[in-house]
Image (cartoon, rainbow, N blue to C red; front, side):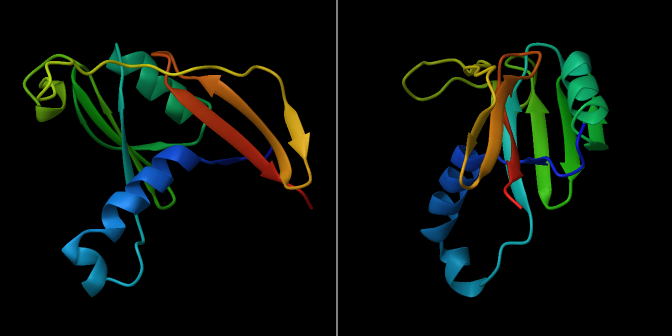
Length: 134
């Protein structure tokens, strides 16, 4: 994999930043150094293998078979199954149950800012790989 390729989770980072910006902690903290994103996965082992083998994440913490926390730089990726004892498996107030999901773009798109491609992890979560223009 080209070393210039960086993982960009634009929508997730944007949503996290918007939620964080409205919190009381935002007034006290001027810079966020670590971003944490949770993905629901159907099966923990293939997801951990995918993110560590192909995208350069390191396992930071793991509680099989329902939870793993991976890291790469300032990104912490929390992988949870939609079943098990953890809070991530609990239904939303409207009754919807957590589940993996996403969409896939298999063609490489290039523009003035760089090149990008979307792919799916083993549970169908979208991952965008981005290489900026030089």
